[in-house]
Figure (cartoon, rainbow, N blue to C red):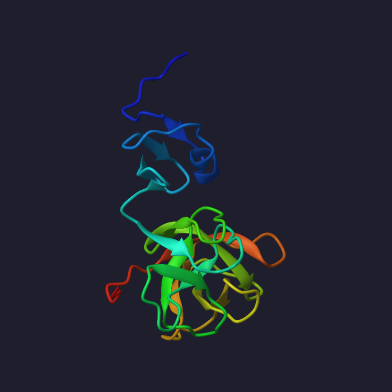
Length: 178
């Protein structure tokens, strides 16, 4: 049975399915149920208004959910994984697994999967998350609000041993300067 949609590439359940679409053309659209967003192909990546397009400035592949920060003294639009607890330079999380030096979509607001390296036991929905120095590019859930490094809240209880990809609500920031 054919279901007509207003999206060029239809409706997909996950961001991984969106990224796997073959031969997309600039301007094509798809609806992703995982984050409830319409994504548009920009020639490199499937993007939406929750994403900032930057470059993976590390020498390694960055996995989905990695917490990315602006490196000290950066003059190019690059980000690297966080390696510091309470890092105030958080831009957001990596949406798709990205090779070194490649363009990457960084989610800076909305509901996305975050690499949770440490979480409290028992974990609760609404736990504060912040950057952590454990497992570069990760975050940890904390029981009380700490301003430095804070960038969102958990929306589901982790079910796997850490690290784990967990749906989180990212706090949109307005103080980015490039």
